Image 1 (cartoon, helix red, strand yellow):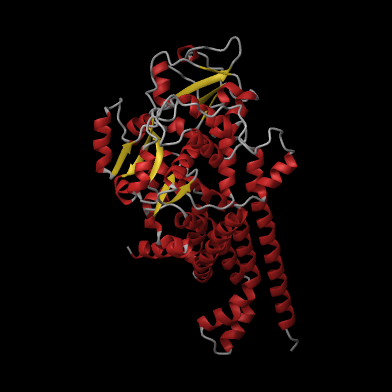
Image 2 (cartoon, one colour):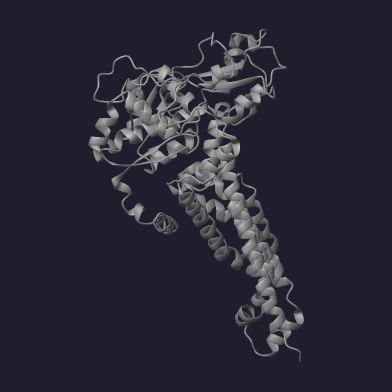
Length: 520
């Protein structure tokens, strides 16, 4: 309990004054794929005239976004009935909506506002002449290479049930959904999972395989929300409720195309759709957002790679992302030093515990980052900065603990005896002799931890902690190499800057030791 109170306090410290007023903000979440980003922006812009709104983009897969909703970090996010039914509530077969609502209410959650379109799962292949047309035709074709999203492979309504229904014996490879289309186009895989409203289906000329044994349920888009959200934000919720039935499948395909093919930002796509479909107008046949239409003020000529990349690096979000990234790195390294240096001293002082301490630090660093984040969310009851910091501290410990132990063991036994002869107690000798002499080695470990943390901090975006990883997650969702580089390049530059600063510190410490040594 004390640990959780300390972490909660740390969360407030990291978030600043905005965290105090978090209850006055409607937090909207979205998963890490194009359609969810866009729908999150539609919700944000719909509610913005009536409440303070924040959109936490691309939080990850269903498990992470659901954990954020249950923890109260977000209030609402776009979801799909099939996912609610089979993945979240774990029903063996589709249940009626009344039962779904009843079971969600026990969790403090509700489902409402059917948006008007069905976005079901499907499998697709290149549109070759000899390609199968039905899922049942995949059986027995063991030479086909399946590249499926990790979530689809693990879902109850995903690969396992599909393989059983159709008798598929192939072994799928896990592939990020954002790059699956390019892998298919370059013939690195033969079959991928898709969402039926994705614009890239027609762009890449894919053949969607018929679900001839009716395995996939309907995935009607709805809103999953905390029951208290409608009461806390009545005006905003009333506005959001007017979206019911207004987004057609053609609308959604066109909006996805505007983002993925035309390169428009998510907020621009949402703005244009809302402008064409005012909520105070009757929900007549929607005109949609044409995939080939150009938004006002957006040029149709493709900019050069250099100009496009520079524009994405130096956009209005750069300062915010830099601040978030620096905060994560500085705090995590500082906390790792507070924990790691005493552990290193313990390992150096007690030979029997040395391998235990170093081994534990090494094992912690081998935990996969996303797995660790997924475990920390329910454990801490929150997403964002705090679980990201905990993960980064875990990964920064090993070089600090190891170098502290090594530096202390390298202190000359003669100097230790001399300090003892002068009457210094063990703690005085540690503070005034051992640690100062071991400082260059310790500082090298802190440098390694800091440089590694700059790169590892990009995972923080997967749980809403921001930083340069935001651009990387968006780039993966859109298969946008420029956006990926716009996140990777500043992170690499920050890592080089960090290394340079520590090199200067190491040089200063070394020179200080050199000039402080006086001949006897």
